[in-house]
Image (tube, rainbow over all chains, first blue to last red; front, side):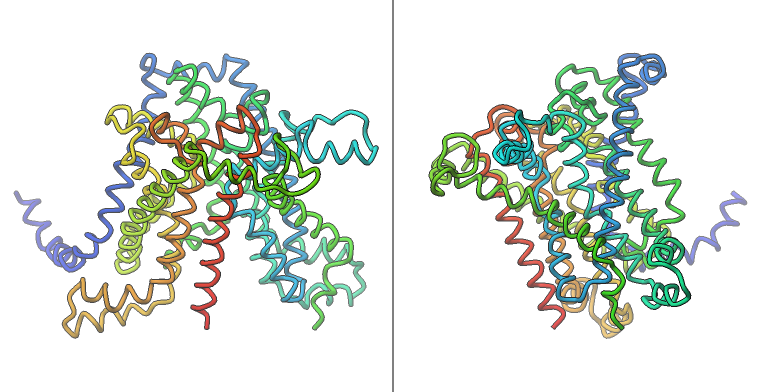
Length: 294
Length: 262
């Protein structure tokens, strides 16, 4: 009783404050309820199932250490993600670099080229790559017609096809943060370095490149996270021969109905994404991205 | 100062090759859709609209298009209504707890779709919502909320909170303040958010594999099956239809932005 009495005076102003803001909390409520009931709860259940089916314990996670097949899926995923991220970053850097230095008229057209793919369904883009890269596809037919090759090249249903489709999907996500970091650089710095005797390459490497580091980190995190759990493009362009983790999960659940292994792989995928975010959250201001005033 | 001196010719050539690479798959779809052949190829002699006729007279494709539209419209309404109110509430209160709410709303963008797909599949089995309009609209609506939150929060970021206080102190109640003071101000954000949420549902291709099977077959779902089974030219037409709607909405968004800046 005494503790209750002691806390009363302190909580009283808080409840009054809560009363004034209660109506604003009511505005937030529908979205929060929907998100908790139909997003957070099912997500939590995925984690739960991974520890409880087929039997309670860490059995599913032990497989990760013992099963070569599971390890191969993760190694393939990581390998493709690293390759994709590396190529995307170089390509995105070049585009962002050209963007900041382009005159406004040309810059607008370049922006259209970067943003247009973002608005096209990922499925449509995967379909387009299939029509371009398959053995009777546009690219192979053109190469044969020109006489560069006699037989069609295997450009699809392997890791090469997956990498092409993924890099294509990810480039805009790399360009935007890179462009944002380059835009803030004083345009007089590089000419100043040149004026002091640096070569074009030296001025870039020692002045411009270090200043774009925040953009590079943000782009890397974004592209790597999106690549890890990417489903549509690897599933279509890999043709079932190269299994990445997302497609492996789909197979486990819809085709083999092995919930334990499926949810375990999904949980490790989620853990990997959260881990990457946690490591870099201090460097990249994700909150600013989301309009928080704090 | 001549800023164009920064990027050398080599960098520019490289940059434009990357940009062409970005446009390549988009530009190839339309020529494929007007092929005069019965298989997927570029037109041999003259462009033909025969596969467009097939698409627009095929009951399967039309049903899918219609179902996709219905689902996208209703899930957009759901996402916009709840997301807008939530963004306004978070903006006004702006406490540690609302920051947590913002993180919660961001989840669908961060968490890979495949992980969420398992959870919602399981839940819908239990609630018997698989393959129903309600089930898909709820899922597309909830995962569309982040886009609305982002765009509405962005328009609110420059909005002076004292305007809202002034309205309240002059006797306006909450719904009047919302309607006459806040809503007109955030309308551009709502419009952009609605466009994003609509396209999110219209293009969504992962969750639908899990939560719909027979009764409901959205356009992406039908394309998915087509790509994995038979690549016929009607697929290129469907791809064009999907792209066309996205392009129209993108143009609408750009037009709205320009109007706002005037």
